[in-house]
Image 1 (cartoon, rainbow, N blue to C red):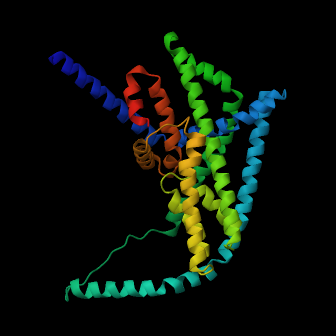
Image 2: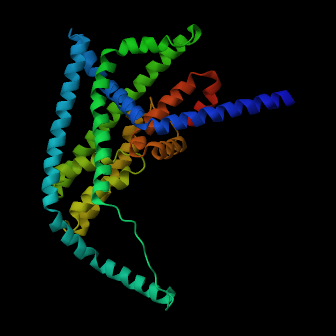
Length: 347
C-alpha cells in the first residue's frame, strides 16, 4: 500500500513538474511560438487553394507562392482601404467628440457633485495630501514603444515565409513528424495529425465565413439606418463579434461610437439589437453548423483556456486559445492514459 502511494505521489510530482516546464516554455517563448502557430494556421487556410492549383498540374512550390502572394495582396488591399477610412473617421472625430461630450455632460456633472460631496464628508480638515508621480522621459516611452513595434513587425515578416515553407514541405513535415514516434504509435500519430489539420482548417475557414457573413449583414443594416461610415463600421463590428466572450461587447463599440449624436435613440437601439441578434445567431446556429463537428469543447474548458492563454500571451493568447485547446483535446483522445482529460474537455 505504501509503495503504491509513493508511486502515485511520484507520478503527480512528475506531472506537475512537466506542466510547470511547459508553462515556462510557453511564457518565455511567446514570440517564437506565436509566429509558429500563426504560420501553421495560415498554411492550413491556404492548403485548399494549393491543392486546387496542384489539381491543375501547377507545381506545389509555385502553387504555394501564388496562394501566398494572392493572400498578401488581399491583406494589403483591405489594410489600405481600412487605413483610408480610419483617416477619414479621425478627421471627423472632433465633430463626434463634441456631440458625445454634450450628451454625456449631465452625467459628468452629476458624478462630479457626488464626488465633491463624498470628499467633503470623508476628508479630514487638516490633512495635506502629497501625491508623487514617477516621471518618465518621452524618449524612454518612445524607445520602448518602438522596440515593441519593431519586434512585432519583425515577427510578422517571418509568418508568410514560414507558412510558405510549411505549404511546400507539408507532406514531408507530416511524414517526418510521424517517424519521430515508435513504430507501434505511428499510425495513431498519423491519424491524430490529420484530425488536427482538419480541425484547424475548419476553424479558420469557418471563422472567416462567419465573419464575412456577419459583416455583410451588418453593413447592409447600418446602411439602411444611415449609420456614418456604415461600410467600415459594419465590417469592423462583424469581425469583432468573433472574439470569444467579449465579441458581443466589442461589436457594439464602433456603431455606438459613430452613432451617438448622429442617430436618434430608436435607430441606435435597432443597431444594438441587430448586433446582439447577429452575434447570438452566429453563436447558436453558424458555429455549431460549421465548427461543431470538428471542435467539441465544453464552455468551461473554453473559459479556462481563454483565461490561461490570455494571461500567458495576452491578446495573442485569446486568439490562439481555442485552436490550441482543440488540438490538445484531439491528442488526448488518441492517448489511452489521457482519455479522461479529453472527456473532461469535451462536451
